[in-house]
Image (tube, rainbow, N blue to C red; front, side):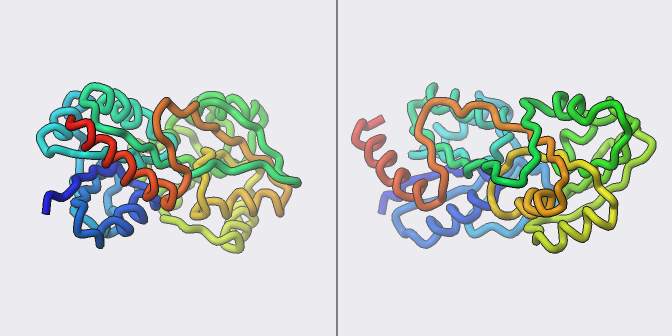
Length: 256
C-alpha cells in the first residue's frame, strides 16, 4: 500500500495525542519531529525525529526528500520561529500545512489580568516596587527578568534555566505538568507569591495557576500570542483529524 506520509512538528500534548490517533492507521506513516530542547521528553507513540532541520531550507529538503504529503505544525503557541519556517516551507514546496494550535485562555469573572504583547513588556508590567513573582513562562524567556532585579522570583520550568538569572533573589523549581489547582494554591500560598507571569498557552495542563490566582485574588501578567498566519487551522485534535484527510486528498489530486 502506498502510505500517505505526515510530518508532525511537535513538542505539545496535542502533537502527541494527534500522533497517537494516527498511529493505528495502516494507510498513513507518521513521523513526529521534536526540537530536542527538552532534556527528557515524554515517550511518543510514533517514530521520532529529534533536532532541528537547519532552518527553512533544511525543512524544505526534508519534506521533498521524504515525499511528505502533509505538514502539521503542532508546536507550542509561542514557537514563532519554527511556525514561520513551516509556513514558508509549505509555500515553497506546495505541500499543504495544517496548524494545530490549542485555544488560548479566556478571562472570566474574578481574573485580574494585565495582557502584554511580549516578555519585555511583562518585565515592565511588574513595576518598580519589589514583589514576589512566580515566573511560569518557560526557561528560555526567564533570563529577560534580570532587567528587574528588585523582585524575588520563583521560576518553574521543565529543564534547568541555563544560564541562571543574575538577579539576587531567585528560586528554581523543576516540574512537569499537569498541575492541579489545589497544588498550585499550596505553592502560591507557601511562597507568598504576589503576582504571576505566564504566557497565554491555553490548555488544561497549566491552567491550574490561573484558576489558583483567581481564587486568591492575585494579579496575572499574561503574555498574549501573536496573530496566527494564513492557512488551515485547527483548535483541537479532532478538528485536525478531519482536516488532515481532506488536505492530503486534495494534494494528491493535484499530482504535486
